[in-house]
Picture 1 (cartoon, helix red, strand yellow):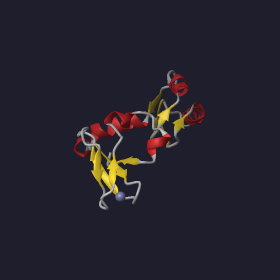
Picture 2 (cartoon, rainbow, N blue to C red):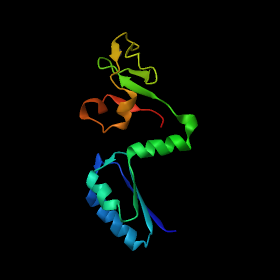
Picture 3 (tube, rainbow, N blue to C red):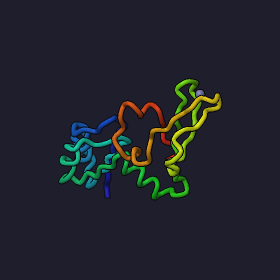
Picture 4 (cartoon, rainbow, N blue to C red):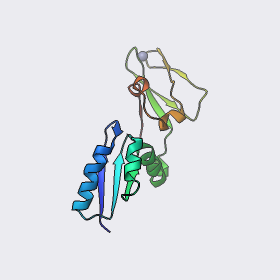
Length: 135
Ligand SMILES: [Zn+2]
């Protein structure tokens, strides 16, 4: 079966990308398309894809699929940067009670990221403070 795969890493994947993608699917005579983004799809994108045999894979779904495919690499830690010196401190999100640690220069580094935050739309305020590791 012919399939076409689209990729995007823009903050929010909107309908205009899918229109171009759907045109490419027609050109390739693909019967199914997979459109993958590391971020999120707009609600209108789901509406658009519904009857066009386009499967939308959001960043959240991508993480789930990767965790299924590579269970040995599941990792519930986040790296938080010390705002005073830039040192990186790792917090294990499974241990919700630990919200403060010290960096190598003895500054207090606070983690305000919870496990549930990893599956929400990123907000400007905390997205620059952490990066998810190894998933
Ligand atoms: Zn520090």
